[in-house]
Image (cartoon, rainbow, N blue to C red):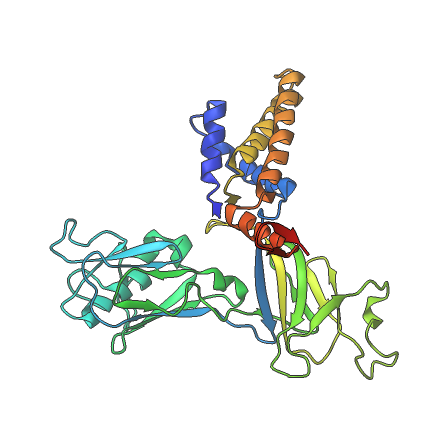
Length: 368
């Protein structure tokens, strides 16, 4: 589990006695990223997959409403929780994250009168079909970082809300969906179908890529489907896997040049990569692995005090103590991440016990 970086910032500010740390935020974000990369345990990063084809695709998803919600029901779009409320409830359902329940499901989903419906809240328009009127109290205006990455359309006849990411690419698959509304069913926990663009045997690796783990073919062609591509070690990469006259392909290979991955086969129309990624929040700020907070905070404090030392305002022994503490916490955090959980220990015990068969001869346990 990864947590918001703000928790680390609060710890640093408290330890250094800073009441307003906003002017240090950019440096602290960079140092947090550095600290997590230095810790670099098996749980620091997350494993992801991304698929690429010739044209790319936008991630999509749906929420289907079978009946009118009841007061207190909610759906969650990319972390933003929207509540359905009656106009007679406290606050009269006029908060940006509240949708007024109409007399019918259609009125709840799209209502240009009274308090506006779900369609108005997600588009910022009073009359969505005509594209007129500005609903400034809508969710999309108040939570733009989370909601403005997608387009929203509602079919009031079928009760289906369709979410489509604006940009082509696999990043849109990270948009999350949830519902605790018994009358609203999500088609998945995330949007799906987002694909990047793969052209001229090249694709651009994701910005948050830390380490490329595997490359495989995702085409429907049965001759190549799920085939694993191997990384080439040749110096003259352009010829690896090809005949000298380029008349045919002999093997599957790839190589990485900067942020580009090059495929050395002409007959592949879809590629899937598996990679370790650095998790980020909706602001683009790095998220911290739970349990790493103290170590990351210590690294930030060490870097902060180094600036004072370089400017001649702090004795060296203080920075040395901070450095020593950081290396201790870094090692401890790696060790904690490497320790098996109680369930994993049980599995290890079961595996170990099956290595040596034990039988009962009636009086004692003997090994055979």
